[in-house]
Image 1 (cartoon, one colour):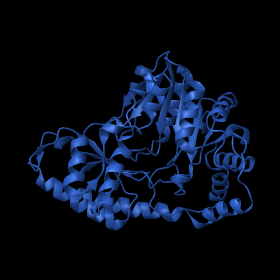
Image 2 (cartoon, one colour):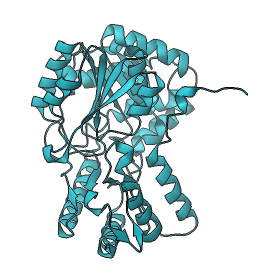
Image 3 (cartoon, helix red, strand yellow):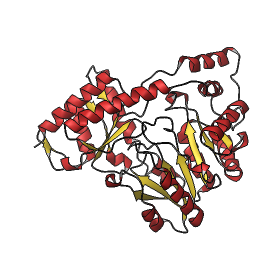
Image 4 (tube, one colour):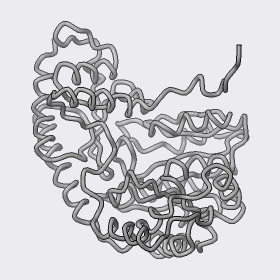
Length: 390
């Protein structure tokens, strides 16, 4: 019998996409499902960005580009990082990628060897651990807890970092918690990375979606040990365009360039022109609308005693439903976050994501990248669900 790649046998499909698919199937059947699973802005891509893509097509910009991305886009990204994030880079330190997800995998591929340890802060985005496993490395989970507002403790990181530790992946603003890490944490983290000689892969895709606090790029402290990941999906509502980027020091970016050239060639030429235009577009109106939705949900969740850590950025609430484990809803015992989400979807027509997918059993993620009408329905359905519990 023919064999296949054994490294894929331990990889589970994205739990976010799984529930999102079920919800869409129910919607296709005419069922009134409130779907708050996807991490995707509900705003249309700004008109100016779309027009730039159309212009690129009309001008015949439809051929291969350099594997690292078109020069003018790399220059603009480098300028943005230098002026807004205080990261001293030039265009040669930038690779444009097929979304931030590809940038993360490229960064890991550039520095990680089979058998290395890569630390992941939990709750964590669903693709970090599978990507680490695909490279034959070992994910080591550093558990952050809600009592500490999901800020990782440096003392615990010091305990688990050792000679096999090659990197840590951090994400601020954070998916799924909405937490923005403070400056002091980043200073301590960079100092530890220097002492223990590991890299920091900093996923900053939600950088512009901040309601409280201030975003700090750790590469502004030491660009030699930090690999910066970012993109256009969240800030410019360009999820389907698939344009991300990675910034790193010369040796690392050289490896990432090699990886990209032999896997993806280049990012869609038309999407690159659209991304170039995006850097001139103000999307503060999206941030303000997300803030209104967040504040509405904070008020409503407090009324029905839902436990959560106040999201300072991104567009998620990470709700602590651990007290519901062991209770019954409509005769069914809730044994996990997945059971809670399955019951909410099938019985109350509300689609959320279980915390198990984020290494946080007993929690549930809600995306408020949806209309106020949908959020109002969601609150009522959550209330009905909580009232059903015995």
